[in-house]
Length: 249
Image (cartoon, one colour):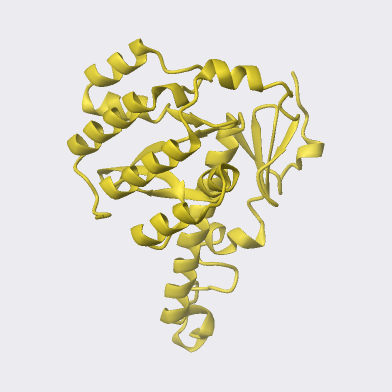
């Protein structure tokens, strides 16, 4: 099973096939089941519009969370897929098969997931996950949903959602390298050669930005989960804490 990235045309073909197969377990960003009209629009859309529309598709197994995400990197379109964290495809397959219940599999897939470049192998693994969880109709999901969504949804120790707003602590230690351009211990801003020290040493810089890259993945993951929990906006809770924020007009 290869994890090599796909062409946009091939990616479109595979996403369309997946969406049509699991239509009854998917919803749009308005929390509504995917209609046949949505699928038809998806199939007839231009390549750019296709991925814009695909980004609106979410899975629904008791909670809503996005499946696909498209972004630009150095002018190139990248398409990512939400799936359980793994080191390689063999590790992914092993982790999926190692889940002893649907609840454990859902937790690994949803809460233990992250964004990865889309590939045939990862899409195949996603199909295995959906097959295990069972295709659900939205009407069945709706009848099971009896409890109201909590006013405050805790995503992590740094992220909460309330009234459609994601409160994220941008100053949290776990985002130090990301938010402070390599971290508070990295300092390349010097004027004289005599000021060179461990804080601007090249290996320190490389390691600092490797950590920043990992922290970015965590930050994006928490934003995606916050969006799935209903967030439409983001507030830095280090600037204004959620319990101090003035909701309403």
